[in-house]
Every structure is written in C-alpha cells, then in structure tokens.
Image 1 (cartoon, rainbow, N blue to C red):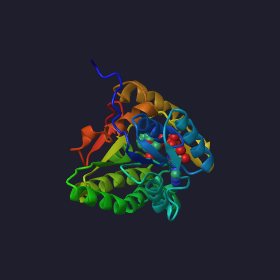
Image 2: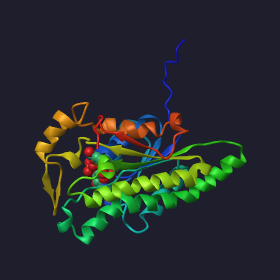
Image 3: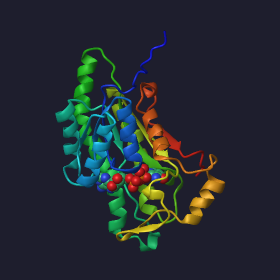
Image 4: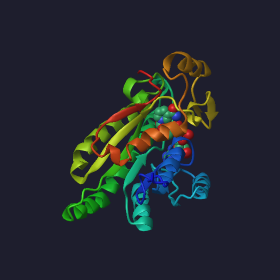
Length: 274
Ligand SMILES: NC(=O)c1ccc[n+]([C@@H]2O[C@H](COP(=O)([O-])OP(=O)(O)OC[C@H]3O[C@@H](n4cnc5c(N)ncnc54)[C@H](O)[C@@H]3O)[C@@H](O)[C@H]2O)c1
C-alpha cells in the first residue's frame, strides 16, 4: 500500500527568514512552512510582517515574528534569540532581506554605497555571527551523542554579483561579497555540519523588478524595454521567474538531499547567462 501521507521534509525544523513580508522571502517562508518547518519571519515594518504571519498561520504554519531593520544594532541577537526562546532550536537561516538604490558611480554617494552593503552583506554577517553560538552549542551536544544533524544557511545573491550591472556598483559589490562569506563559512562550519550555500537569482517577478518607478528618494525597478528584451532574448526559459520558483531554489538547499553540498552558488534564473 503506498503511504497516503507524503512526508514533509522539514518537519520539526526551525527556520529564520529575513525580508519575509513580501516577494521572494514571503514565498520562502510559505514553502518552508508547508514542508513542516516552524518559522521566525522578519521584515522592516511591523504591519506587513504581522500580515504575512497571519496569512501563513491561516495555511497552518507555526510562525513568530521579529520585525525591525536587519541593519539595526542588536537586531541579529534579537532575531536569533527569538528562535531560541520561542522554539528552542535554530536549523535554517535564509538571509534574504534587501533593496536596491541604483546610480552610476559618479553619482553614487558614500551613504548609498554603504546602505546597500549594510543590508545585503553586513547584516547577514552579523546574523550568522550571532547564530554561531547556539549552532556550536547544539552541534557539540549532538556530536557528543554520536548524532550528525545538518543545519542550513542559504544566502541570497544575484547574477549581478557574478556578472556586474551598470548602475549597481553598490548592489553588485554586496552580492559578490555574500558569495565570499558563504564560501568561508562553509569551510569554518563544516565541522558543525552546517551546509552554507548561496542562491543567485536572475530576474524574479517582484517589486524589485517591476517597471521602473519611484519609491521615496530611490528609483526602483527595471527599464520596461530591458524586461521585454530579457524575456525575448536573454532568458532561455522565456520569462521572469515567480517568487514561488525562486523559493523552490532556496528550499533545495534546505532539504536533507543537500546534506553533502556546501559552499556552492546556484543560479535560479531560467538559464540566464551573465
Ligand atoms: N527579484 C529579483 O529579480 C532578484 C534578483 C536577484 C536577487 N534578488 C534578491 O532577492 C531578495 C528578495 O528580493 P525581492 O525581489 O523579493 O524584493 P522585495 O522588494 O519584493 O522584497 C524584499 C523584502 O525585504 C525587506 N527589506 C528590505 N530592507 C530591509 C531591512 N533593512 N530589514 C528588513 N527587511 C528589509 C522589504 O521590506 C521587502 O519585504 C533580495 O536580497 C534581492 O536582492 C532578487
């Protein structure tokens, strides 16, 4: 008799996802929760993060929230402590939060360059540094018991971090930097059985890739002509990805099937070359 109840791959695990109120982060939280993980979600503002949590709970997920900017002093410890105090565990970290603030280099201010490094590179570094203490404690305990328990870090990069992009010196530098952080931690944390990998997205249909628009003082989005050209000529699969397809790429690195894969970068981009 085939088993009627499919096994959920992340049953009992605890996952932390930053920037999960919308877009890819929200889809990642939904996917991990659908596979049985309990989730700590973050986003900058309380309202959107609580709305996302309500929607996830409506689908049966166990969710707690940790609102606030990932760049705030003390955020990293608060985020990690939320997982430990609410669930007593920490198994998966997805560093997803971020935004773009584009200019050509001659117009890019120090503030603009630093802000983008802060959110895409420094904040993940701080979160992982804060997570290192509980991870090492759990891993030592498990090793003493003769158990091998794999934990997962998925850092989010971009094809822009691999290939560069005019107008995005700040973003490309940060997204290249997160690859170096990923590869280094894969080497430092192998002994603790942590798989540290990176997903570099191509073009995924979210607010970040909407046709260009103003968001406060920043212009966000992509030129409509480029979007057309991407779909017509540059993306072999012929269209932008959905947030759910992007989340599936992240999920692959959270499954037990990726236990012997670490320090890698996978492009989830419909075949786009860079
Ligand atoms: N959409 C794409 O095509 C694409 C391509 C490559 C990489 N990415 C990366 O994927 C990730 C998700 O992007 P998205 O497309 O879902 O964008 P999005 O704008 O839809 O979502 C990003 C989320 O991050 C949150 N956020 C931004 N700054 C934050 C901060 N300081 N603290 C906490 N939360 C913050 C936003 O509020 C938002 O909810 C980002 O790291 C982005 O750089 C996206």
